[in-house]
Length: 495
Ligand SMILES: *Cc1c(COP(=O)(O)O)cnc(C)c1O
Figure 1 (cartoon, rainbow, N blue to C red):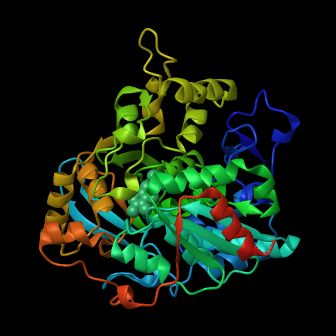
Figure 2: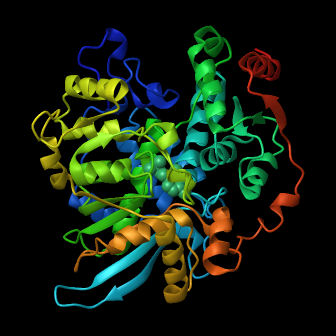
């Protein structure tokens, strides 16, 4: 299996097709594009039938081996078996089986003339940090450790977080040989729960750096360090952001799992609604569909930051300035541009990398592009979006509170704010005869402030998280000063 960049056509030889292991530790392709398989591997009906009885780890192996063809089968099998265990994904609700890894529950089923309308919830947030990012990041941690050990290399992961990604990365990399994590966060700006989750890690290879400033200051520091190539090379700096291909492909697995759990035969279709920000999660759904999984609709749910909803309604992709980005009660979806969107656009424009390059250059120069086909637009491919099954909707703070209340009243479970955006939008897209699966992207305990507003009671915390704020915390506070940051990293890597 070879990988190509979405902008590859006019690219130099350094952009030649790559193997899975070559792109594992990297981010963007050298030409600024994103990696995708040269062709999507296909899944046969016989394979789908055989996969119905597999465990999650076995299914992950079957799917990943189509993409990671340069990792020996026995090694990949061991890595997936080690990653997807009920001990790691132990935060399942009462009545859900932890061994299912992503348990699927029926919320409601209404019988009607054209068949039943069914709304289901697939729990992706039962891992160590209570958000779906663990699903991919835990695998990444094991893949990184495996690859680095083989080449006797080391890696220093450097990033900035306002919450979910940083903690998922730290829990995935803690204690891993050859890896250190340096994670910036805005000092005193994360919730007490999120701060405690990250800062209570005492592992020697985890470095929490609280920056005197806001999240943008942290990101500027990451950018400054990334642009300092000699430092980056000398300090073996890498990232684990959402464009990482291995993260996307690990997420493909749970679409298969959800489909297989919701159906009994391959003639049936299902739809998914995905609380979306950077388009990483739903991009994995698109890939599953391109592999032949019988997905009917992929519905992108956004919050007030509706870049994606606007595109799927109008064909206009218009990124927002950071001042135009709202701080909402589903903060992990507060994005101004969707970093994985280029992968879908590549397929939408018939894999014409010249077009992709021009369109995303236009994003840089003019803040977006228009594929509506109207006079003066940049193309008319919006008319093909329906063929790929994409639909969308948006949700507001009030919708979120109402949905959290409704779901608690009607089904007796408490959902988080991002999942609430998903359920609100899913209900607008239900179709008789096609089960609608909403992906649960976090557990409510992570966003308790809003749960308290909606329900007047605290969200339940999974076992082991009861007194997390009382644990000793390990972190350093630092000014937003790049030179100081670089000195701190060098001192701790010894490189
Ligand atoms: C990251 C995140 C999202 C958005 O996922 P994308 O892959 O960026 O679209 C949604 N919900 C939660 C809880 C998240 O942490």
